[in-house]
Length: 269
Image: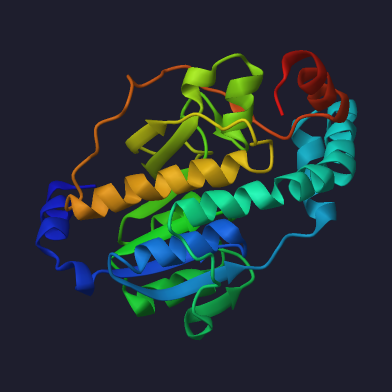
């Protein structure tokens, strides 16, 4: 963010801040709407149409080996539903303890778009003219799209970047015996995968009742605390809880047997 933008944010009355959210439907988007409403007005929530499973799988095959992708699919179709059911009560507890209601975003502000990378999406953002755009769970936004958005674009990443980019950063920190880097990052969005400039980070500890499905909710709540501090401080960067890391890696879902082995012999749920 440029110096002018930082000064402008400090002078901008809280109730006059306008937000646009680019997201997919889900608990974390509900929580984001609720939090941002405390710091201004959520003018629109642009919900991106889900990509087909076929498109996602083909893209994964282009990046990873055949056997690795097949193992990940077995994890997603057989283990993930069981983990989600097991964590349902715990996730509700996390949300309630943090003081959130987990109600859907105001339907009056919902706009459905095919992709965040469509010209139509940029045109809608330009028409609304928000002060900030928040991204949650969408496709990677292309550079040519980001270049056309004239305001800061932010994201809460459930992992400590750049060490744990991609998905399920908290789980992979535990998997690697790196529990001190189980945490969350608030950052500006660029065209890379979670490579944008860091605003703030927070390390936290999962509870005994947490598992693969509840880790992201726990982390996202912590990320909302960072966002709240960011806006409450007038855009001042929040001090990180630990020194920044330079190691970088992009992570995907674990494989079926990979997950089970670490759960049985490493206790990572």
